[in-house]
Image (cartoon, rainbow, N blue to C red; front, side, top):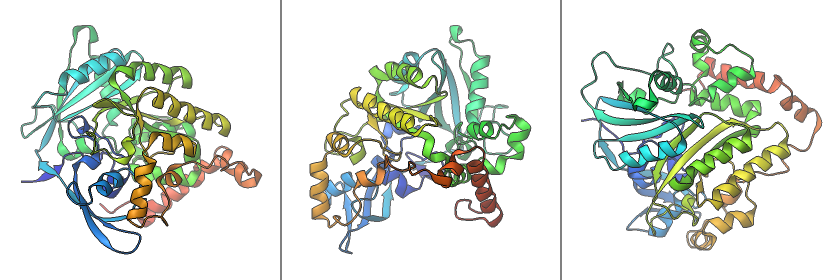
Length: 412
């Protein structure tokens, strides 16, 4: 019997170590929690060169604080993971929603349904969205098998929107189809959710089935992330996931729309929080609700660096005020005092002393953005900030990787 992870990182460039040391919430997280909740124990090399096994029973504080602390307490070399029996297909049900509040009500309705295995959603505007419920099965729906992993296949978010357009929301219609298990688990890899659309817009390239097919080798997560960082565009890209209490989700999405002028689509993913005493570092001390709604916000931000930083800081302040959390895989714009006002700095520093981690970078030093970065001016700043030089350099670097099969593009 084939077995799979209980919480499966849905982008192939998310490693097991990264999912544990960073923060990874996926479509089964409403049931199991963040990815780190599925890890039973870790082997970790400490700052003095010794290695120990940490779990809920051994070195308990270290185990839970290492989760989400970005490798700042030691080097994790081995993880023991929980697995479940796999099935051949996921039967995916699409449910249209007319608002964020409507989406929350649907998620609440199904979160305790035993036969539902996966649950997430996409909002395309304030008044149009879809919730997707997945059920593991070995029996596909006849003549309704869908894939997202071939060059001729649509990107997942586009396919979901096309289904939404054909459903009558007033009649509460739903639609079901079957997806082979692997294409389901990595359904957002092609196009990196919808971030690939930004690349087409950047280069003023027509966005249609033909161009997506022609450029398909460039549209996978590893390649796109590599190109984005080499191009310098990452410095002004908003890539953030914020966990918001259900009751505040509508207010947050409306505020996001007003503050940004409309960043769409938005990803919705409910995440079960860890109980007191078992919280990962990244959950912080600000969260009180049992389930948070992860709102994924991914787009290019303002070109002006001060405006970009201000927007990110406004997001962080808003989320903190609503009793939510920020995923620490992303850039953080907090001041040091603000950061340690959210996270348990006393416990963290005690563990750094106890486990010889004082010479390692702290988690704040790892995730923070240096506000001075990019302000030096000169020809380099002009080059990276002038269209399309940075983008062309990123594409050239990605093309080199495609030819030479470098570390970000594994052999098939």
